[in-house]
Amino acid sequence: MSARYNFTDQQGISVGAVKRQGMRSLWRAHYDILNGDMAVMSVQEENPWVKVMDSLVGEVPILGFFTGYLFHPAFLVTRHDGAVVMRLQKVPAFFESKFIIEQKAPLDESEQRRVLLSLLMMVLLERSRG
Image: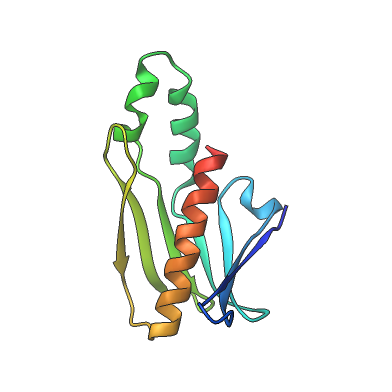
């Protein structure tokens, strides 16, 4: 339930990791961004009801084609003090997934790389969840 995905650079040096919080992620997606073994930031769904509505409407014939245009999940990246540093949101699109990432607070280069890799992995994992 709590898989960890490690990121390395071309030389095999660890850049960071992202870990899904198993039981906490059943209702609202929750991931920890790690530097070594220490959680430095977290990613959470802004509104879990968007996922619920997307799943329900997606099962309705014909109407299910429009869920990508109607529902736009958003995710917040926060430091442990609660400060939001980035926000990722899906933009309206019929057949493809497009996202906007907004930086809300300054990050150094290594933090930015770690957060972007974590968001990419999280989007791929959440896509498979539905």
